[in-house]
Image (cartoon, rainbow, N blue to C red):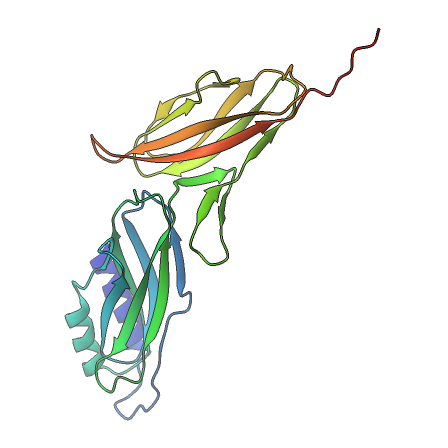
Length: 238
C-alpha cells in the first residue's frame, strides 16, 4: 500500500511538473502536527517539495522512526523531472508505556543547497484513544489526561467510547457502584454502556473505569477514566 501510494503521488506530480528551467523552490508541510495515541504503531505526514531531500526524526528516544525505503527512488525522479511533488512520509512508532506524553520532530531537508527545509511535530499521548469522555491535552503538549465523567445521584445508565489497536479489557474499581455491560473485546471502536446505582450518601462518591489494551503477552497500556457521582441532596421530612 505504501509503495503504490508514493508512486501514485509521484505520477500525479510528474504530469504537472515544470520544465528544466524552473526556478521556483519550496519545501513545506501543510499540516505539521500529528497526534497519535498510546497504542499506535504507525503514523504519516504529508509534505510538499521541489527538491531532492532527506527524511529524519529527532526525538529523545527511538520510539518513532521514519520509513526511508523509497527516498532514493523519489529523489531520482525529482532530479530527472523538476516539479512540485506532493508526498507522504510514513512512521513506525512503538506503544507508549511511559505514562507520559512524548514528542518527535520530523525533518524534511533539502540535500542540494540546504535552503528549502521543513519540520513537523509528532506527539504521542500517554493514554489510549478515549472518545467519551474525551482526552484533555495541556497547552504545552507535555501532559494528557482523561476527562472526568459526572453522573447523577439517581440510578441510571451511561456509556464510554474508545478505539484501540489491540484486544482490550474493562474493569470497574473494586466495590464500585458501576456495572459494565461488557468487559473485553477486540481491536476497533467500541461504545460500552454501564449502569450505576443511586447515591444514598450526602457526599459525592468517586470511582474509575480502567481500560487496558494488551499489545503483548506481558505488557499492557492502561488508561483510567475517573468518575464522580453527585451527592444525595434529598432531605428527610418529619
